[in-house]
Amino acid sequence: MGQAKASVIRSDLDIVIARTIARDTARSLGFGAIDQARIATAVSELARNIFLYAGTGSVTVCEIERNGRRGLEIMCEDQGPGIANIDLVMQDGYSTSRGMGMGLPGAKRLMDEFDIRSQEGQGTTITCRKWRI
Image (cartoon, rainbow, N blue to C red; front, side):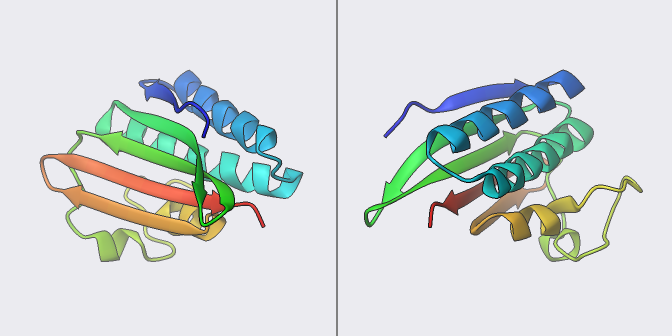
């Protein structure tokens, strides 16, 4: 499959860059406009969380294939404070920043697969995938 494209998240501009990479990769894989927007929105939310809570991290976008299906995988990693209670942050409406973002539950709804792993004091890794129909 295609080359993985990673972007370091350290600023608001980096969030825009990660979002653009994800949208462009989705377009090149033949995703329709609605799915491109879903993917870009999820990446934007996840990258913003890296910036807000960890300060720095990375977003890696790559093409994947499984059982003859093509898709897009996004891995968001940071070495921030980690998440003490994943069940809590995955509840709709939960926010520590009082922001109007959709949070992790919203990002999960936009993708087909969503896995979050976090360890306090070590960081968080979120891997999500969207499959072409």
